[in-house]
Image (cartoon, rainbow, N blue to C red; front, side):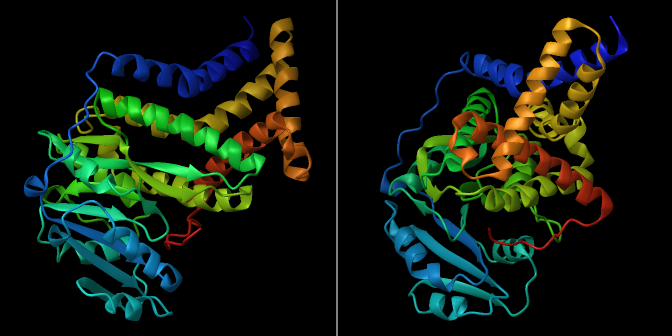
Length: 377
């Protein structure tokens, strides 16, 4: 077998493992475990919970967010709301103070989300903390179900399930398809042992497990759960606890969000080398397969294409032609919204865009050009 063929097989196998073999394998392992669904806790068994939210210029969403939290099926005398206005230049802090029982920490200058969460946690006295964002809304029973799972022995964090409302574009549909695939993997990881990270829009932790975030941390919903997993506690996904958000309807918004998220992964990897140690990281294999290998796939895609184009083997040349056709379809989707109406072209566009963004995030982090400021998308 020629060298180009060997490189192609190695690269193709790596991609296949990351996107097919690992998901299938973790799903098969998860089937060997019981389906854990803790029954909803009665009111007298519900622990006190502090809802912690960092907000920056969110005046337009304050009323809706408060209304949604107040409508949750959870004993209201046990539910405490703590907001951090992170350098907001609008009326966010003033509007929040108008609501009785709402505690507000106001920072006159932006310190970033990590700084805001650390400041909030320094004032938390309840045994459970719920982290969520301003934009999303939670289904009425979400918190009770989330806390019911969290109170199980050996569990340190539980994430809700983010459900997207599709705005109706084909690009959004394919982003939604990718997200459903991602949730399938996360549910399998949760049932087997632990999820690698949490859904930042709605996740609860046992307060004593919290480890303060380093300044400028981009991914609190990755680092907080991973620090909890490091302590030997499980990190679960409760698919009954639903949170609703709207999908991005174009790739520019999705690209901005993914660039920040993927750049945050590189930041966390550099800051926490214990993640790469099988001794230090109890979910080491899941971490490598789900997080690290995904970020390496774009480079494997480049290797697979170039090596197959250099091959003199017939079947490898056929696969080279297939790759060229796939990337051509992606290019057509990037050039014209009309072409993106095709499901195949829209899928190719989304897949290539996401992997290209992963490569950009790595390059920006390596060159020191990654923007560490927390921004909304």
